[in-house]
Length: 421
Image 1: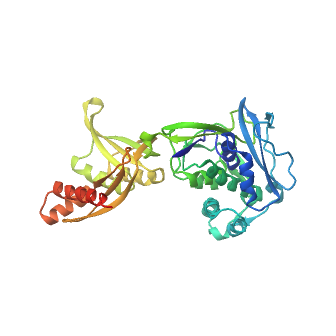
Image 2: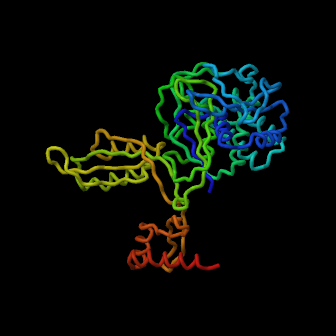
Image 3: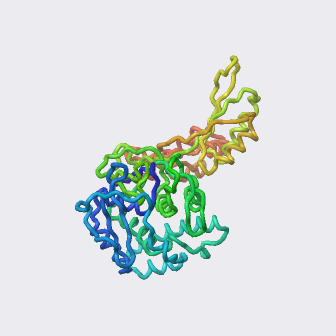
């Protein structure tokens, strides 16, 4: 499986994604050929090598109308230093406003493959949904400003084409740097991250960065969150290519998006990587009778797991460590449950990376009744079935049997079903 890992420690935008994939070795001519199928002859693309704080990367640009520079091959363009400010783009002058239907019409009239159109439209729909949430309106009423310009449409289409030309099946990424300060846009001066950007990045781990500028754009956030839900450390990967996509500005830090492309290691081909929030607090003044109920309420609030471990606290007092795992978007509800159902007056929380085997829900019929459980794909490529304990317990009581007997019957039935043609 070919995997791409984006290092977003300097943020991410559409042109940086394409620049990184080109810098890793993608043939520019193939991308030009793909873009031609968009059937917008006024658009052209170019790429050149630039320096960002003495590090080399590829700056990708889309041009509308007569391009201001020749389209050269990656290897023959000389290094250049960008000015300290971003170049104004065509849409900043023209202020072309298009809605989702307009963009769908542009893509529908093209010669792009149906799957390419669908992927591009999913990205634009993400953008429209985020904008609608920010402005308190509906997706159909949203008009794109900067993102609706033809060169911005080409950024998204080129990103889709570049990933497909590489044959990338799975995308992972680091936590995303968004920057600080303010940014000027069609709606005026806004705090960084811009409202649409942070809306798109809900549930995604972010990382701090001192830069007083926008590092992640709505377009970059939309592409990345459409491609992946796996944010964390680099997965087990045999790296085949490395690319650096340059941002327009030459900043005090290397303004580069790095991508690592390679094959997933065989031993971890079935692993999934994500990041969750781990919560910890010490409890030393609760009745043991109340602890099981507290755990139930915390799980009902959205925690992925919650456990208690005995410890000896300061002054020799016995107590418990409450440890819970929560998705980022459920942290507030889990926190409320902890404060409501335990004696805790505070807790620590921090992001932790997870690696887990792929699993899916399954149900198998047995003599005791239907048993639900998890179908797990092991690293060896084999599948196993893990029955739900609560279901086995209920069926055991109903049938006057043991939990072990119901569990064994479910496992035998599942293995027998798998052995049939």
